[in-house]
Image 1 (cartoon, rainbow, N blue to C red):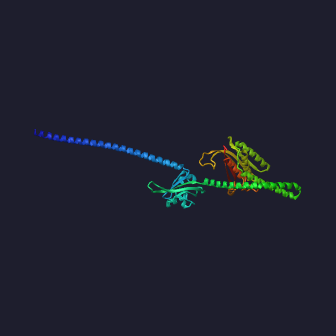
Image 2 (image 1 turned 120 degrees about the vertical axis):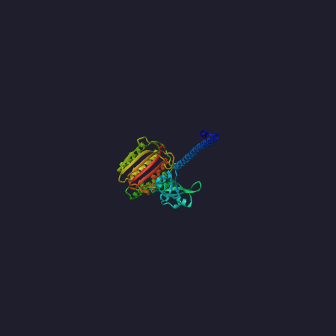
Image 3 (image 1 turned 180 degrees about the vertical axis):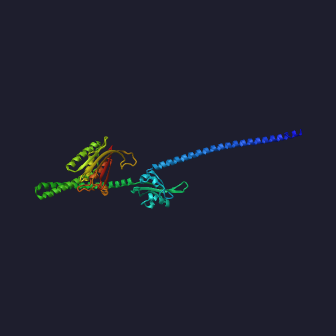
Length: 425
């Protein structure tokens, strides 16, 4: 019985075991609660992380949207924009800069500015100087070389580029092509000069015309009084011829100085040209010139509004000029077409309109750049008996039609005259 008593659990042991179990159970419950709390915290952290990630994604998307928006603005500008970094290398080069200079962005990025845009340019007019000296430029002018080594005038501004904290990042240059503006300024100056010259010429012509009439009258009386065979009769005839030439010059001068009033009417341009060319061909046959004329007309109907009489003067003048550039014969090509185009005296960027295009091309002697530059200047002529008013009048008539005339010519390689006229007149 004593051995059996040793294996029995006493009351104290049971109570101790019960206390231990209760304590263990409490610990388990505490651990379970701690695990649940940890799980809740983990879930809360996950939610917070998701919210943070969402905000970050939204922030990045917004930044990307702003960046794209700014890039679109930058690429849509008609002015060239470039940025030079602290190493004086090009870090940004927008689309307008490509169009103005002829360089592609991938050709200039990370290359020294002075190697690209700084050739034959004063250092002080570059963003590199702005970067070094901290001196900005505002609305100044300079000339730069394009990729094709052509010099073009630029209007430009430069300034330092800094971040929000004022740290220096580089220098920015904004520039635009002044070629058209310079050309327009030259044209305005030329028109003012011609206007003053025209006023003076009109006054002189009126003053000369009356004495010429008197000289012509007395020369006719002398011519009738002097008998045939008298050597003095030849002198009188020379006087009459000279007066006729002077009178023709005076009349041309008066015609040139008068303002042109157009009588615009609907014209079938192909038929109009064919009538003029037919008349011109008869003159060529009569003078026995070895000149061939080729026509190129559009298949569609080519109607427009013109002052037929005045524009006939334009076409005939150009055809006769072409024939005179072919002293040994040759080819004249006349073509008409419809083209969408902005003419130069309209606002840049305006909507292109349908223009009537007339080209007269010859394979004759051509002309030098010096002659071409003076071609439309009144009284300038390379012809022995020319007055120098023919092409000036042609340009005046074309401009009265709100058109544009251009001449391309190379010495020994012929000349092409192109005229653009709005279809609406």
